[in-house]
Image (tube, rainbow, N blue to C red):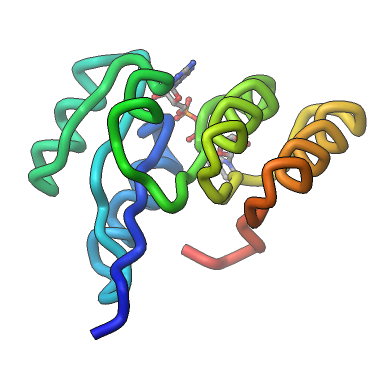
Amino acid sequence: MSKLLRAAVIGVGSMGRNHARVYAEMEDVQLIAVADVDQAAAVRVANIYGVRAYADYRAMLDMEPLDLVTIAVPTRLHREVAEEAAARGVHLFVEKPLAGSVEDAQAIIDAARTAGVKLGRRPHRAL
Ligand SMILES: NC(=O)c1ccc[n+]([C@@H]2O[C@H](COP(=O)([O-])OP(=O)(O)OC[C@H]3O[C@@H](n4cnc5c(N)ncnc54)[C@H](O)[C@@H]3O)[C@@H](O)[C@H]2O)c1
């Protein structure tokens, strides 16, 4: 049997909830945890799938053995979260738009390259 990819979602608002649902449905992926500053939202989504909830995504990145993470926080925070995840060697799947500025988008690309992690951005109609 091939290895399951261990995934988490950061930001479980409108879009992050969809990512959590799809990860939970995928055969080759194991949803491990979700994080959201709105702790009640994190717990609500985590309870649906029987996974751990974190209010602090950095704590989740430090605690959980993740292969990849969806970043579905508000766009202005994509860069900060992507840099934190990439620095820990976690592959990135970022909601669109990748960033709010060209500078932030380039910083995310650079962070992924430096860390040697894959960077994916959701195309239209993937969910
Ligand atoms: N809603 C849509 O139809 C839609 C469509 C396409 C793309 N997107 C993109 O998806 C991303 C998220 O949008 P959304 O509509 O789901 O927003 P949302 O406001 O519904 O959800 C964002 C979530 O992120 C959480 N959050 C905020 N700061 C955080 C932090 N520091 N750490 C952890 N969680 C934090 C919020 O509490 C919230 O639950 C954005 O980049 C947006 O452009 C949204």
